[in-house]
Length: 466
Image (cartoon, rainbow, N blue to C red; front, side):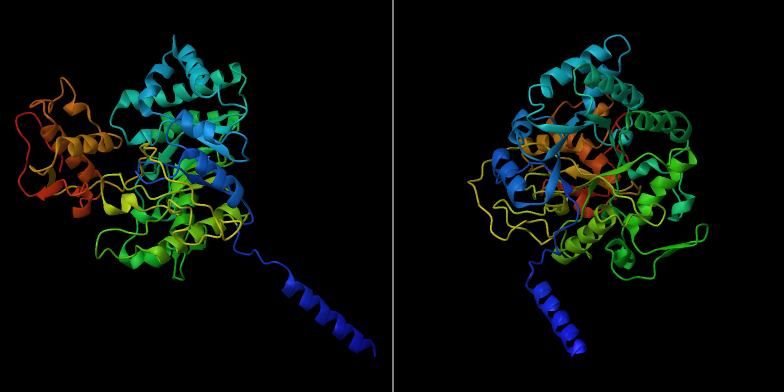
């Protein structure tokens, strides 16, 4: 009789478990997303904030500027914001005499009116500053971060942390084995020791933008997408890496630990995978984007951690919330989004709390949102502007490319300032962008306004990089 009762009890428990609501697809921890709006078909910031707060598990948003309409939209929501300063603002904040006053004024103008109604938890000093060839800008980065942290304390916002996103080029070239990683020479002695000490002192994260998308090849696609693969064996740690993202994170950790700062938190400022790219490009689509982001979320949000950082969680911002149809450059630049403008998912990451969602009337809110790029390479090809391209399109190309490359040569007094016209200036910066981003034909597309040539467009003292 007793075995029969136990059997009936077990059956009852199984039935109850089957009847319970299942929510396994929703991540166990909230996640952050980058929110850019360089598009003409997106809903208003207020509609976005309301939808994210009520219908998703997203609890962090990273902005690429300090647009007050976007910051105020998230007032009285449970979502915290990371707000960004432009790269150009840093030199004035770094000044020993006037920098603190400038930093306090920036905080008063851009943050104080919105806090505490809006939960601003992170202030980012520029974006990927170390890509710049402007040494004075690089030298201003850490002093500006220190002034901002001091200004936040003095203005009554000590909870707002200060950081800056770095591209993975801060690491010295290596063989891809995580335990061999180190920071670039010079950075490892002069820049990162005091910066990491700043992060330790202020309990702020060291932020990186790891993008396996910009490093994969067809033969390493499974390794980049968290799919089954043989992996990369690290003979020093005797660990086998089956995901490029984890290898990149552990490479950053190794470089930090070499300097004695393995205890400083690492945050992921941007990481994602596009759903569309150039025709014939292998490894891009809905399934690929879903596989990458799902795999990344398992690493950063579940407490799984990485081989060298087990059981750790990482503050992470997926790139990105929406596709941005106004961004120039390769097709992929416009297709990193996870939501459509009507808030339906482009692919399912399990971030929606419920299947139904409202669809507010869209309204354009342009806010440029740059994304990272792969390592540069040389060769006998150049990218120039098509003669038929309009001045408006070419000026947009200049505005976009100058977020990534050194545009001093086309400024007054620069070697490529003359002839002083949009066509000439655009050709120079489009080529610089093309060279820095791998020299694929699609890196010269610029929405159909660029063309690759084998004729060197250099003239006089104006030298086009190749």
